[in-house]
Length: 404
Image 1 (cartoon, rainbow, N blue to C red):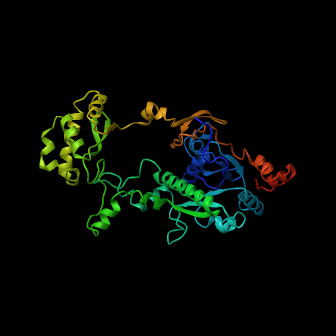
Image 2: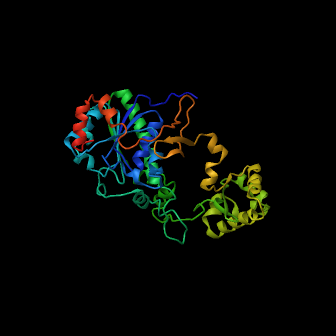
Image 3: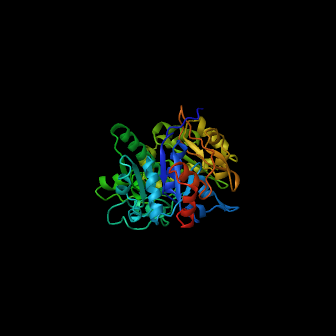
């Protein structure tokens, strides 16, 4: 595969921390952009201090900052702000995920930045967006999950709402932001104009709520979507099935051809034409009918001492199904490894470590990026010298004044 990257030559100034912003800029970096990460002198970005931390190095930081450059800068100082603006002049994209209003208080709002770089693309990620009655509320991923409807829809019917197993609000917002930035780059290519992008985590999560919102609106409020646990609320079979001995599979039969093949495999051909089970909505919308379908499948699964035998039979019948993987199974899965979804990095502090890779794959370019994450301030002097032409004496002054 070619080592050429889609975004070679694009320069990114990254003011973000924790997860949503760093996840976005990691993808930009893997796509070939040069990313300068602005960090607080002496302390660094928040994610440097997040678990897992082994031998003094954060795995959280390593997975989000491979190949970036670290520049320490006190943005609250006039000298620090001036350096930031000088770097903006040389940048294509600025990313930040502070609480709304922080960049403006630092003199680094979009209006401030575009005054020195008119065609700049700036992307802000926040919980609720930059304007509106909730814009100033503090929030993390869990707040976005709660207020998007996602948390309400996650968990068992008779149990409290449950957080998603990962910080999906952060990573989903980062993925949405990547698409927005690439669209803005294309627009700039056509028109020469930069623009400001306002990404709200809550918006991004509510946008992927599937049918929950139209179910409510189309029924004029009589259908109030609720948690449905391991199974789809309206379609069956579509969910997680207990195969016994702490093994689980997922399975879906959302048309009558697949349903017929499934019934044949599990030895229940009588269910194919039974009026109670004709149609995926009929099978799924009534709780008792869904229970009977689930029981039939799980009873059959538990007749197999080896779960793979059951999965092989389902595969032969062309019934979409898969084992529920543990993390150990995932990182050893041949398909996952074949797609280079793990990247081995030689970290300057920790040593060799295996980290998750960016998921995009291209025919002519690569996103495989084994470059290590930077140590705190590793590139400060190089950037100031080569980008801004600062002398060694000037850098000593800035360091003595706590600017870098």
